[in-house]
Amino acid sequence: MSNLTFGAGIWHFATYVDRYATDGYGEPRSILDAIELAGQVDDLSVVDLNYPFFGGDFSNEQVKNALEAQRLRAIGITPEIYTRVFAKGAFTNPDPGVRRLAHDLITEAADVVRYFGADYVKLWPGQDGWDYPFQVDHKKLWQLSLDGLGQLASENPDLKFVVEYKPREPRVHMAFDSVSRTLLGLEKIGLPNIGILLDFGHALFGGESPADSAQLAIDYGRLFGMDVNDNLRSWDDDMIAGTVHPTELMEFFYVLRRNNWEGVWQLDQFPFREDSVDAANLAIEFLKRVDAALDRLDVDALVEAQDRQDAVAANRLVQQALYG
Ligand code: FE
Ligand code: FE
Image (cartoon, rainbow, N blue to C red):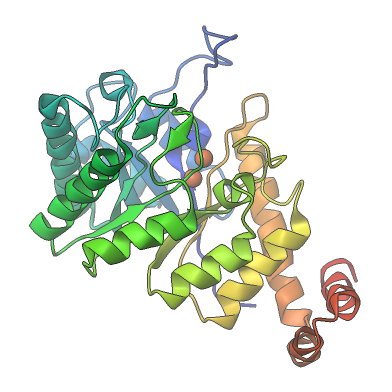
């Protein structure tokens, strides 16, 4: 059994709206309410916090006290560079004033990371992209993405920045859409303090094999964080980890273990209709099962099977480990 730390995006414990239930699937919760719920999960140690804090005008100190009361630690701060004001992008907004706003918000978030002693500023440039053919100049848009990110990383060399890529939503096409394109961008910027936060579900949704995405990011020294969830592969459904793609989840964690990758196993789930504490517990129970299965897995035999590309032998070993 490895020494695992489990975490979650604090939004896991919020309530949500969509374009149908515009009044929400539950009463709105503040970040303090969400932290209290996160504290009820059996084995959760860290959380990723949206910034500004939602549901009220809370100080860093109030949030810190709430975390301490639940024995939780902040792993990352996620500046909300994807809200209405950034509808046409944060780094890539056509309005330089809005780009400046994004820069300032992320700079503020960097200070919040320092305050909490968190590991990184988490950037999810969900509005940076395009919707229609001919809507953008692709050269300019990509350059703005790299310039915005590179500037922040060089202004804050004491901190880590992680970019979470995703194929689409809310933009029809996101600029940081895949592991390979994100790596290309990060390598072009060439700074050591920017990495990838690999979301298992985004890789699935993007038609990637998450295990391969993880290996590639690790090979370039850029896998700074990860989160897990599940989906039906045609959308970022953010369902409970392990419910749909257990074998691929197992392969993902196998690759992390083979590379001695040490980091938090984080949940990025949106339990719209489920009890959020129960949904987190189920995911963590499954992640522990995966970890125990990795302990049982006959790795030598698997390596040998892979050397022959013997899919049947490999999957027999995995199934024996996972299902007994
Ligand atoms: Fe995520
Ligand atoms: Fe997502």
